[in-house]
Image (tube, rainbow, N blue to C red; front, side, top):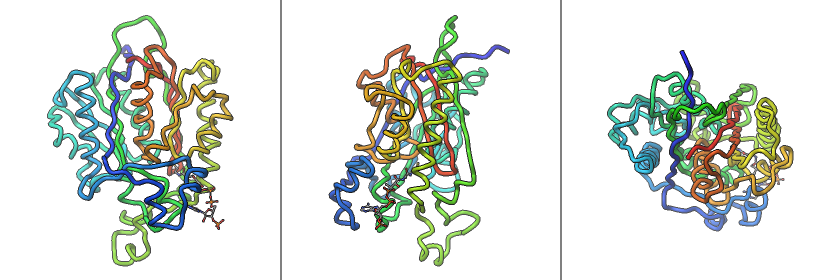
Length: 334
Ligand SMILES: CC(C)(COP(=O)(O)OP(=O)(O)OC[C@H]1O[C@@H](n2cnc3c(N)ncnc32)[C@H](O)[C@@H]1OP(=O)(O)O)[C@@H](O)C(=O)NCCC(=O)NCCS
C-alpha cells in the first residue's frame, strides 16, 4: 500500500469576545500589570461568558474553517478534539461539536494531551489521511481554561485564556517532491512530571465531593518553576532533534511556532535553537496560554499576516502537563 502525502489545507481560530486584562486581574488578586508583563509577556486573554463551552468555540472554529475551504461540515469525515476542558466527561466534546455543526458523516473523539494536545492530535489525524482512510480530517484544539483556573491564585490565574484553533488535513495532489505537507511529528511523554502540573479533583481518583471542592481540587495546581525548567529543556531539545533528523539548520526554517505558555520560555527556546525574531511567532500577549489551541491560533495569524507562504518550512513545538512534549516539521501548502 502506498502512503499518501498530507497537507494542512485550511486553518482557523475562534476566541470569545470578552477580554480579561492585567488591569482587571490587579483588582482580583495581589498582582501588577508590570509583574505579569515582565514574568509572562501576557497583556490580556479572552474569557467565555457563562454557559459557553469548549464545543461552542470548536464549532465556530470549524464552521469558519469549512467556509475558508469552500466545503460544508457535512463533508468532514473525522474530528479529533484535543482538550483538557471538555464540556463534560462524556459524551466527548467531539460528539457534541459534530452535532452542533451538522457534520453528519464525521466520527470523532477527544484527546487528552494538555498543551501538547494539538501536536499529539495532528500526529494521529495525519495517519488517517496518509493511509487513505479519510480525505478530510479536522483537528480542533478548544479550551475553556477559565473553567479550571482558581481566580484567587495569582500564580496561575494570570497565565491562561480561552480559545479554539482548527486545521483541516487533506491528501496532497500527486507530486514527485519528497517533502510536502506534514513531514514528521515527534511525540514524547514523561509521567514522572505529572505532579508538577495537574488538576487532582473530579476524576476517578478524587470524585467530586464537598471535600474536593473545599480543598480546591478542581483547579489547576502547578509548580511553576519546575514546569518552566522542563519546558525550556524539552521543547528546545525536541525541536533540535527534528531539525537534525532532516538535516535542517535553523536558518532553513521560515517560522518557528512554539506553544505559548510564557514569553520567557519561548525566548529561551529561541536562544538555544538560534532562531531570529523574524523566524519566531509570539502572540501570548493577546491570548495567554490557551493550551491545545495556541499552535493553531499562531498558524492562523502567521498565515493571515503572510508570514508563511506555500513551500515554506515550519516547525511546531509544544510542552505541557504530563509531562508531554512534541514537535512537527512541515511544509506550508496553502
Ligand atoms: C508561573 C510563573 C510565571 C511564575 O514565574 P516565576 O518567575 O517562576 O516566579 P516564582 O513562581 O518563582 O515566584 C516568584 C515570586 O512571584 C510571586 N508571584 C507569583 N505570581 C505572581 C503574580 N501574578 N503577581 C505577583 N507576584 C507573583 C510568587 O509568589 C513569588 O513570591 P515569593 O518570592 O514572595 O514567594 C513561571 O514559573 C512560569 O511561567 N512557569 C511555567 C508555567 C507554564 O508555562 N505552565 C503551562 C505549561 S504548558
